Image 1 (cartoon, rainbow, N blue to C red):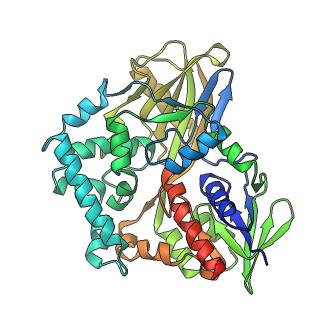
Image 2: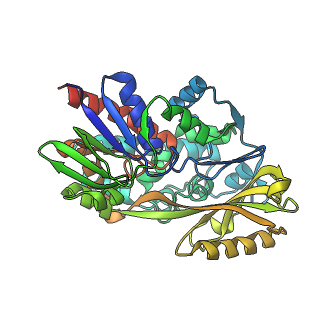
Image 3: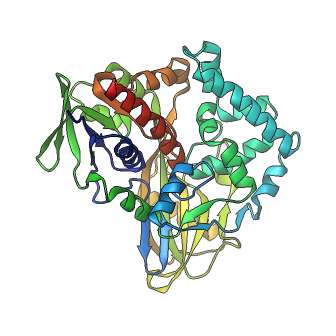
Length: 420
């Protein structure tokens, strides 16, 4: 009998897992996505010659599976252009940090990272390893005099919406800041899909059974069968379900949440990340991608413009296009817009048009006490309980590369369980 798999969420997590499962075995896999399009936070705004990434942006050397899929789908890539940080080359800014040379700090970081990540693979995880994993990124780095690496992470973490370094646990920083990312940054190999991330995920979704505009409103798990009630009025049955949406959202859908599900939901604080596409009469940055330390260093006020990426000129939209990023904090969208106008004015620019603004539920930051209390083990051990599986930012990292690589392992685990 063919096993029926229902995946709730048609973002990168749900779509990549569906592709991996259907490519390797005879399974009946259906993906349910509330939005009218697939891709989730991988969303491209397209008008005229402009293709602007409002969510997912870049690929790195770690995107090996994704890059292979892009090649198969005929998606070409273009390099990220010149980058500045406080009006200087970003690497020059990093090198001015305190401590040993940058190569020495990179080697120390990678060696100590490997030690900790290996400790976290052991079962059970030792209390000392969990306590180290729960340290804030800045606390862990500063104890090792890795001040240049901390500066690197202002851009690789905070600027991408992954939290301030004095708030985010080091284990989450390490999942993203690995050898692949460091080499990508040093060699300036960041790339973006020419047609946009939305086009990529639409091509991934095309051969799959993906039901868009179908929000799941209730989940029942009774006698080994899952019943999914949809906003369309339909009810779907499956032998296994996959949570590919935020775990706290899933808990609200479930009739009887499992203890592990509730623990995981309460162990996470979600960031808010706002991207705004603006048009200006004149360019207000000297480089194509600019970032500012005043918005990225520990203690910075949320709502400030962290970065601005130049995305071309469209007269119909109001002029020169910039994609800006802000940590949302407790601000409303109109308040963030007003703050953005002030920030751009500070740089000598003026907003002619707010083309599009998106505030994302973004980056599941672990609470340190939860990490010390066994969160990392529980996130792994809960897989498959009551025929329920989990993927997405809370279980790997917000970055698409981490999500897809995690799913490659999860797909193997699911297949082993389903065929045993």
